[in-house]
Image (tube, rainbow, N blue to C red; front, top):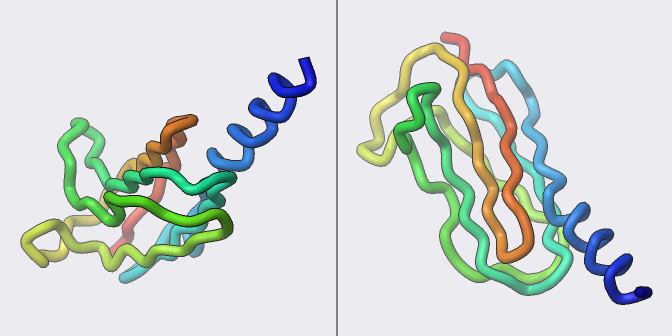
Length: 103
C-alpha cells in the first residue's frame, strides 16, 4: 500500500506543467518537473489538434526543467495569434497547458 501512495505522488509531480508569461509575445517559458529519469515528449498543438512544434523528445533526468517556445513552427515560421495546447507526455502521465500567443 505504501508503494502505491508513493507512485501517485511521483505521478503528480511529473504532471506539473506551467507557462510564463501567458499570454505571451514573442516567447513563453515552459516549466515542468520529472520525478524519475524517463522519456519525455513536449509538443505544441493548435486548437484543431495539429502538431505545430516538438520541443522535447528524449530521455531526461530527475528535476525541474525549462523549455522556451519562440512562437514558431517546425519550419521556423512564426505562428499566428491564437490559443495553443502544450502537451507533456511521460512514462507516468500526460499533462496539457493552454498558452495564448498575442501578436
